[in-house]
Length: 536
Image (cartoon, rainbow, N blue to C red; front, side, top):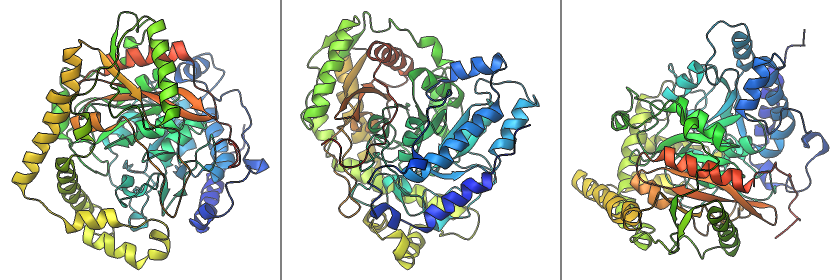
């Protein structure tokens, strides 16, 4: 019988790291990884769900051993990365219960999964959005996605770090920084940004700290970290995955989706997450559009005969490295049998990137959604934006040491009428949908669009914020349409992704194309944990 795993030791490690606060993030952790943090290559690393499930079926692996494997990796490696904000103290007990066969095997039987710290869980873990203001918040009910993961047999391994309040705290980019979790670091080069805001989930998936994870996106928060960490990120159509029990941002844009090392694993997870959610009215629109098994759409020959457009205006030209990688990816698409229409520009692309109506929608929705969430949250916590802002000022030594709260303050200060909001939302949808993505798809009879997800990750800068040159996320974000980022290449060892984007409910098509590209390109490789003095 194996010795019981010391969960308390992991949490002690996390507490000791957090006790150092973000001072640890400002000190020379950009040097070489300490010897004890260097990952050992184990026989389970980089394996996907299908391979792991096969080993379980053959009796060579069980849920407890797999969970223990990832807990060991978190304990050894995560003090370097700050990807995991909290470990589930009951993870091994959940795994043992699954091994004991106390419930039927589901599609995720025994698979350890990490959740972004916006997803509520009715257990001994906190749900905090990375904020000290919500420490101790323990909801009475699982988020819909957490409940579906458990019902499918997943082991909830823990919560991941993120840009505090999903990036809404500050008007500048501080990707992967939160007062509760410190600074998440890119495992491919330790002084580089993990991109935001599902930073910890993407880093954890890349570094083999879990089988896969759950992220959320308002604009880029799944696909951008996926790109920076050489993993697959699926941002679903708004309404495909229920958001009940997820701390909100901009509900007309918010999506919950999988982040995994392969398209197949992302497809398996997506099939578990979808469906009607009685706490999320937006999911009513998904009736007739969701599928319980997205793996049936995966086809290694799926690019043959596909028509794919390349929108050059706005989405190329901001990064020579990203452009070069995207050009090679486009050549791969052609070689795999796709017809590439180039250019195939989104007619409204330039307007979408700096749209006054977008700011109106964000302010209006964030203010109301976050105030409502805080008002209903259990325990002794701020009851609205005003109290949250006051809390941060009172704890400025930890909350505002590096990151300003000018984003929260702007949302609190500004306001718009309902008629102004409705007009702005209609403008967003018209320019991004009928006159945007749908217009170019229809004009050229396209299955999807492809473009670089974003450039190579910038250097972390706790004082001025991370640099952000451009990216592909805005059209799908404003439209509420799906996008998938797949690893496409490396610039001096730094990952860059390729985004496949389509119309509403086109996840089956996008997964088919992304999978075929993944199989043709075979780009994914494990992290190198390089120090700061390597490369550009």
